[in-house]
Length: 141
Ligand code: GDP
Image (cartoon, rainbow, N blue to C red):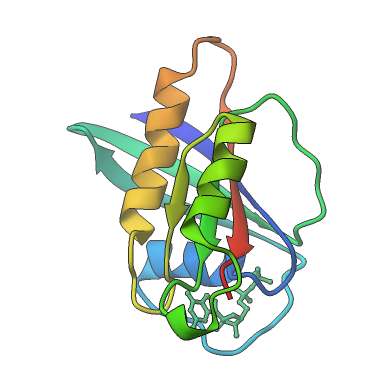
């Protein structure tokens, strides 16, 4: 089974832990408890290939370069409080040369699709020694 290392980055409070925990356990964390660093592991099937994701949920300040990235706008369930438009997110993703996805850890919108896309990004990565991918989360709120 192929293993994928995923790092979740972004400012505090945007929903990095909630997204990760929703994906791994299927539950939503309501309470905000600033993360220091947590490590998770989950097996999924992506395009018929069994895959193991090792996910590092960070405090958000780390810098990673040259790795495949998926830009995430989280909290899409709070549409009425939206501060980042889909076109702004899309434009930034085009600037970074990466996919953009809007998610909600609360309503489980696009959470499985997000982590599936992360695996695909690593599979498509042309350099054989690249094993880490960043999931960079920002809040749409
Ligand atoms: P982190 O610091 O980026 O890890 O943020 P957390 O995962 O701890 O989330 C911060 C707060 O936002 C918590 O109170 C979560 O319940 C809330 N939150 C996270 N994701 C969502 C979401 O998709 N929708 C809503 N409405 N709240 C969310």
